View 1 (tube, rainbow, N blue to C red):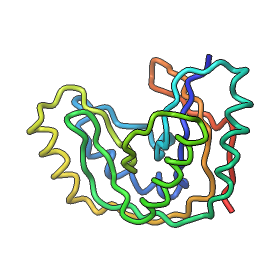
View 2: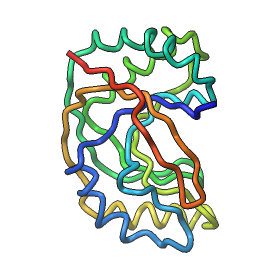
View 3: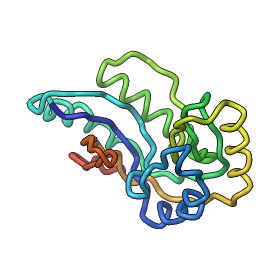
Length: 174
């Protein structure tokens, strides 16, 4: 069984631009996402048998009908008291379109899609502390633009030190 998700991986220069932000996180209170693991999750599929993967690749090949597009990052926010994220201001409509296509071709339940890049998960901060952290981090200039050139089918291998992500299949956009 493999733990599978679909993602937009970030270019190295964008990942590198998150370094100063991640260094400001209180590591004893929140768990930062490793720089190499930063991405936009399009859909988490969960555990799949390896023999099902070729059918998955075939169904998702229809994503190659989408054209490359620009994404711009801006601002920091949070979901409840669980996740700190960097927001996306440009390209959200295209990401939503692709997320809907994924749900349609895989015949999945429709879920609300919010484009973001998770930078940390809360360990033990109370709501107000977590909100204050997000507000404080939001003073850090975070931004950048990049072109989404592909959608990747990823495997998440859970290790004691944290997950390791592997690209299983890359679907190039037009």
